[in-house]
Amino acid sequence: MLAATVPPPYPGTMDQPQANPGLSRIDAALARIEAAARARLAATDSLEHRHAALRTSMAEAIAALDQVIASDEGTAEGDA
Image 1 (cartoon, rainbow, N blue to C red):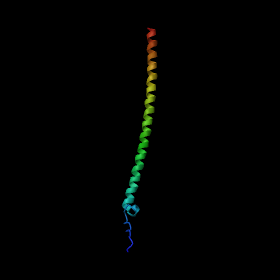
Image 2: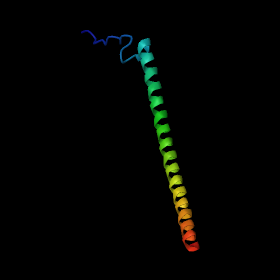
Image 3: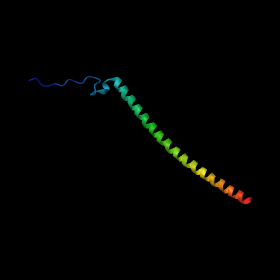
Image 4: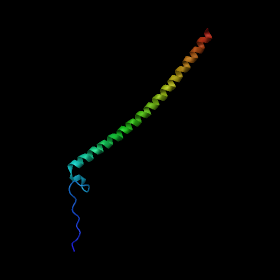
């Protein structure tokens, strides 16, 4: 009886992805794309937080200006 033999994997198959330089380049490109996507996500999150902080700061400044204007109008009416 003959023993069942498994043929050796061919270079560049899923068993040996590093055997094919083209696959290695694709893997490296995918790693760069994934890293860039993570960096962009982090930058977007940072920008959203900075925007929210700026929006809060501007709302506080406008409220303070409104109070100054209102108190100035009250003083001007009292002088008349």
